[in-house]
Length: 143
Image (cartoon, rainbow, N blue to C red; front, side, top):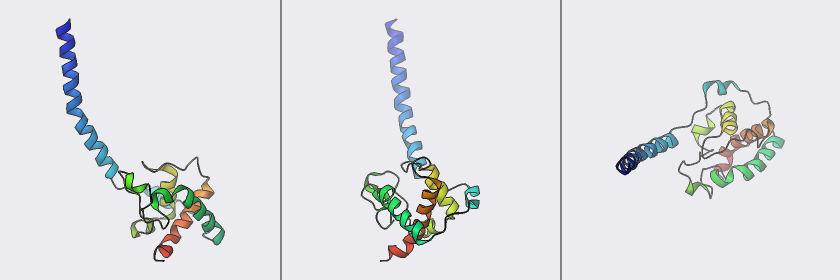
């Protein structure tokens, strides 16, 4: 019985050693893929006007929930960003600013590792206020 047990252990060891690098490569590749909201998210309309009240609320929420990774000005350079394998989005970039409000809302709602989902942490209205504030970041990024 001992030779069979030894054979099983060696086989398990070889299989593990062979598959681990492939799992790491696949995980790393998935982490680096571009994150794109589904096309139907583009049809979601923002019901919250981008007025001073909404953007002020959005800024407060952004400071609490987003600046650790995205930074004060939304450039993706917050203090936690350096330790993340997937770099945070630059909210001032054309790539983000050209997205529809619905796509940004969808991203905030669903999350994408390492960014958490805010579906339960923030109400719909709060997530829309964040969208409205993110829209202002191109103006403040130059200051």
